[in-house]
Image 1 (cartoon, one colour):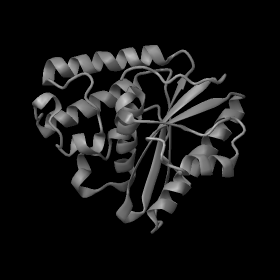
Image 2 (cartoon, rainbow, N blue to C red; image 1 turned 45 degrees about the vertical axis):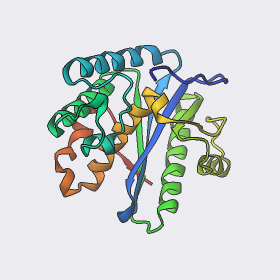
Image 3 (cartoon, rainbow, N blue to C red; image 1 turned 60 degrees about the vertical axis):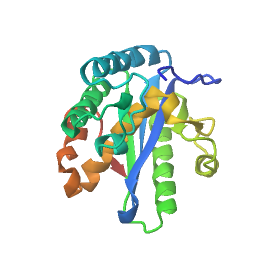
Image 4 (cartoon, rainbow, N blue to C red; image 1 turned 180 degrees about the horizontal axis):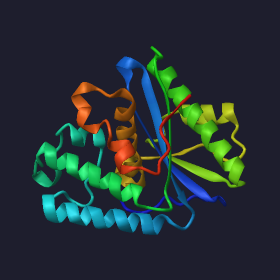
Length: 224
C-alpha cells in the first residue's frame, strides 16, 4: 500500500474510483479522486503522515485497510485493538481533511437514486460518472486513466466504457484491490461520506455534513 498505480499510457490525470450506496433504496454512487500525473507522491506523503499519526495515537497499523463502511460501524480490530467509535469517527474526519487539503486532488461524485434493480442502479451511476469525467476532460483538452476497486471480475466497467466511448478516457478502468492502494481507500472514505450527504440515514446523522464540511472545494454530488 502507499504507491500510485503505473498507467502505461500518456495521460494527464489518473482518477481513483470507488462506489457506495444503499441497495434497499436504490441509491448508487461513484466517487472519483483525480490526481494529476506526477503529483501522486505528494498526496501519498500526506496520507502516510496521517497513517503514522494514527499508529502513534490509536495503534492502527499503517498498512491496515481503511474500508469506511466497516471501520465506522466498529467492525475490525486493527492491530488487535478496537478503537472506540468516537475515535473512528475522528480518524475518518481527519482522513477527509487530509484529502480536502490537497490542492492537486479533484473530486467528482455522481449518483442515481430510486432504481429497484441494484445492478442497473450501479450501471447508471457509473455511466453518469464516465460521461461527466469525459465532458470535464474535453473542456480542458486532457486525457485520463481510471483505476477502480476490484479484483478483475467485474464486467460492468468494460461494458459501460464500450457503450459510452469516452474520447478523453482511452481505456476502460483498471481494477485494483483496495487493500493495495491508498488512493482507492481515500476514494472509499469520500464516497461513503458522499453517500450519507445524499441518503441522510438517521443512524448516520453524525455524517450528514462531513462531505461539505471537510471537502469544501468538492462540488456537490451530481445526480444522473
